[in-house]
Length: 378
Image 1 (cartoon, rainbow, N blue to C red):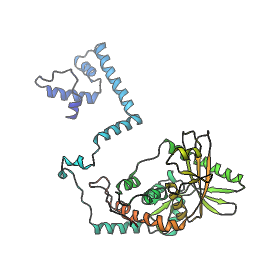
Image 2 (image 1 turned 45 degrees about the vertical axis):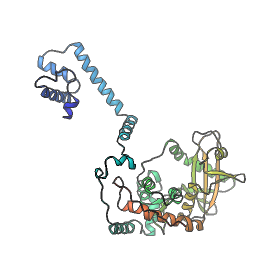
Image 3 (image 1 turned 180 degrees about the vertical axis):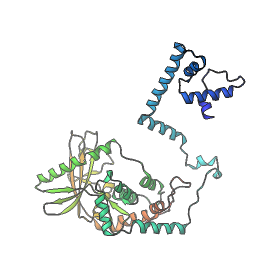
Image 4 (image 1 turned 90 degrees about the vertical axis):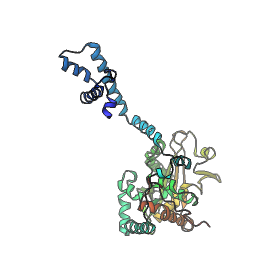
């Protein structure tokens, strides 16, 4: 039926005559087997004569148009836009109004497992993934030093809450639904945009400039790559620093790099006044990281998980004009970590992330489980 409907011979046949159905089916079969120029080859087979110039030209042009069309459709950007248009037209509305017309009977509900079964699965999952020996934790860090280009790094991160997301969790109101955040943490396909990819490529350059800046201050140091560090006590938490710093006195710390202001011709100081969401602020004629910014919670997470006393937070513009760099040393705050950050991170993981990791409800109706108020509000 599909072939007959799609390749029915154009206007070459009178589709109202007796036998027209079979005629169209035969035409579809010839078109499928012999391609766009089936008419000329069939003519030649039946009449034993060569088709005329104009007849042959018509079907040659059709074949060329089809080939050009296939070439264009095979381009990645065309495939992407075609897929986006297609998916935009089939998106299912999740609002109450969108579902009201058809009623609950029209929705295929997939039953969830019982609470006791879920608890049992959670216990098994925790024992399998978060009960590691110290030697295994060190092996994970060793084998994930390539970070983004390491398959192990990606696999280990997927089942953990990592420092780059600590701010999102800590600042989230526990009364609102967790589905959007859990969906973003576990199922996001975002692989960076042009600015973030450029920033990642510039990291090695920034490290070199950081070493040079410290050398001007007569501080000799080296920077070593780091993989995913798993918290020894709370093993569903992890952190990946941009490097470990070791100075000439064997003092150890971390660095976290942010290459910012891509294609923006402004200094870091100008950005503090013109970009509301910028990570730095002016404080006593110095640029410092905002204490309520996600990067601040990321830095505290890195230091507390890696058990190191300080981190050099480096912000650099990616444009040569004007060039600007700011290096701020931030110290570990164990009290803030133990009393504020850690309890909320543990509550979110255990109540919101762990059930989805254990028994996924993604893309099933009614969707990812909502735990309600997932942490005690004081």
